[in-house]
Length: 111
Figure 1: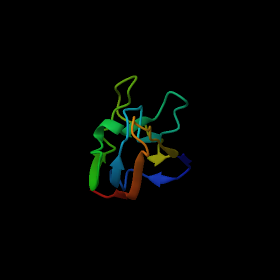
Figure 2 (figure 1 turned 90 degrees about the vertical axis):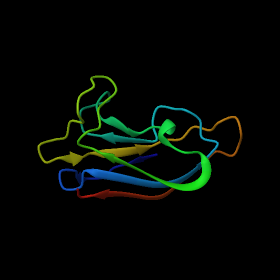
Figure 3 (figure 1 turned 180 degrees about the vertical axis):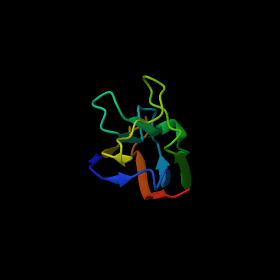
């Protein structure tokens, strides 16, 4: 699922995900941020391996000023305005079904 958003990340660099997960398998990303650098740009903010998959409510956080991309190991490149161009959410089912990834809340916070 892909969301097109415009987010002034320089003002709101902390991303917080509140979720419930069960039977989620390893995969490439849970949340990927598009910085406008093209198909090999952007970065993975949270991976399936970051999730606790016990069916209980959990919260994870990331500072987007410190997130590095997978390929070049550089800090997330934002445009001159510090804007996120888009975001994609992903989940992969494990051996047991159903796989559940409930996004309770996703927010961007100031420092």
